[in-house]
Image 1 (tube, rainbow, N blue to C red):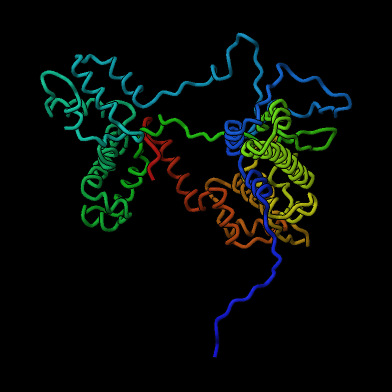
Image 2 (image 1 turned 90 degrees about the vertical axis):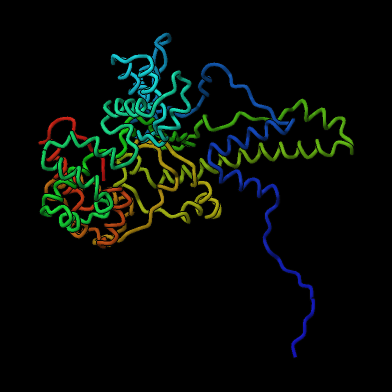
Length: 476
């Protein structure tokens, strides 16, 4: 019979000290998260202070390596751009185009129309109620109740104001549904037959249009399937979100942690000073504490120890980032000079063995850390790619294959786009063994449409070129 009992055993297992846990946590943070963590430490720890940055450029150190003139001041693509301008000329932002919002664009059109003050107020209320897509989601009754006008606003007045706004540019604005938005744009369809059939589809067969049920719509409308397909193609060229063209672009700015610079013919990883916090230990407070320290100041002692750990972790973080980045650059010199097609296969283990750290440490360092190169700003993990065999017995990286696929598609005949099978065959003639499904995966990663869709997009562009000016686009 089995019985339950207790026994003790000694087992050795690795454990992370609090100091090491903190170092690992700081190492895997992005530059923004790390900057916030440093600010929190400055606010809570009396032994840490922010170092004041000296005015003007620092003098060059004797024996410092001379930067080659080849290191560009202006990098294209996604790279860093340094703007130089004289004092008094304003900033670079003064030369940027001032984007007009949808509401300001519509209000500008209303103010030049011969409207009474009451009519202008009603139309402006409709404009201010539009969402980012250009739709009116708020019921007209709610808008009427919110207007402090005397006499009270009648529903017919607000409906007239809505029609005024719907007549403005862009076409389709102030609609209350997708069908109404598209119907407001039917006047841009050059063919009268397509226009009439499209109006019938939008009013009675919008669900069938979404399901692409051409046969069912043709049966109910008693039209040929070819006529229905032509009308649906015209509808798809309309814009279901007319307000998007006035929306502010969502731009996410990335501050590189390291910058690739050419020093004496060799690409070198240089730490970006913009991401290095100016933090130091307050020597005066530390000396006073050590001089008058006693048992009652245990909390201050913990703060002092924490401040020293923070300074050391700062040095450890940035030294590790630079070492890993330099090791990557040493292996990807051709990529920096020639672009993605020159990328070599690279694994975390290779970098870990050279730097002398664990693979998990390299993984933390390369996550959310960015390097600025002449080809753009890339996350450090972008430089790692698995090896693919070539017909000659060598190896190439998956990134290089993706770059080659993009180049082949860019050079294809627009009227005869290459299918994934043809792309795999073309890669084979150049000595790269890549399966069709792998080509499909890489093409999708590059956000390139399949051959059939590229051919259809070309046909749509040709039809739009032959159509009258002012036709919309963007519906799919």
